[in-house]
Amino acid sequence: MNLNAYRIISFAAATFIAGQLVAQSPAPTTLVKANRLLDPRSGNVLSPAALIIEDGKIKEVGPPTQVQGHAPNDVKTIDLGSATLLPGLIDGHTHLFLDIVRLPDAEAQRHENGIFAPGLLLAIVESPTKRALLGAQMAREDLESGITTVRNLGHSGIDGDTELRDAIKAGRVSGPRILASGRKLITRGDYVQNLNPALAEAILEQEFLLIDGTDRARQAVRRNAFQNVDVIKVAADENLTVPELAAVIEETHRKHLKVAVHAVDKTSIQT
View 1: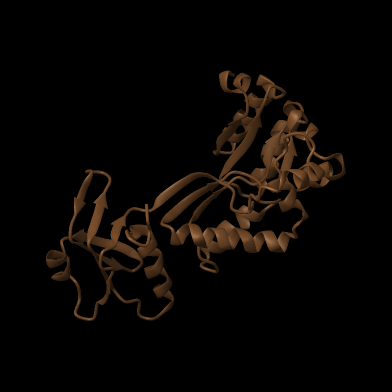
View 2 (view 1 turned 90 degrees about the vertical axis):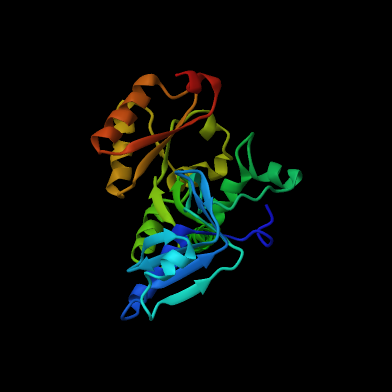
């Protein structure tokens, strides 16, 4: 889709813009007009369309002639012309702090052992501050693209995604609602064995929590829960035992959280 020819803005993005106005006193009521509005519940498209935003929330949606009649005299009007309004999009699996760059083959062979992703190695050599800035940039770009909720599943350092989530909630930076997972839980199996040995320990400390055995599995869940994560991410390959996975799930549910499993092979998918 050519976004220049067919501009899209989300309900929730409009709500976010209005939310920024809350800092002003008093917060204005905003009337947003556009050529189309998509209602996913009914599957219908309303054209033309308008909505009223009041106190940072969408109060009314309908035809412009109807909605404008309910707006106060001092309403702030935003006319989006040919744009289409739709609810905010949800990205269920993203890595805001990982900028995947594929190195040339010769360069990649110098930095990786086997099949390990060079993009992760590049992230490790960056400073935590630079990764934090990257995460904030990618979060803002997601929101500007109409993505209003993301589930960040690993590769954000020790506490990058939880801190970014809280900063967005506090209004310090722009971005979507984040469900943060903290560090990914893995076994010391093929995933680790494919790391460059000179870099393995640094990568493990920053990106993962090892769960060799049921006790360590429960401890890893608790460590992430202490960071106030929203979801637990675990990588399941042939080295992860059923008791270890069961321990992760049981402890996660005990913390009233959910588990996201990266099933990396046929065995783990069937398990």
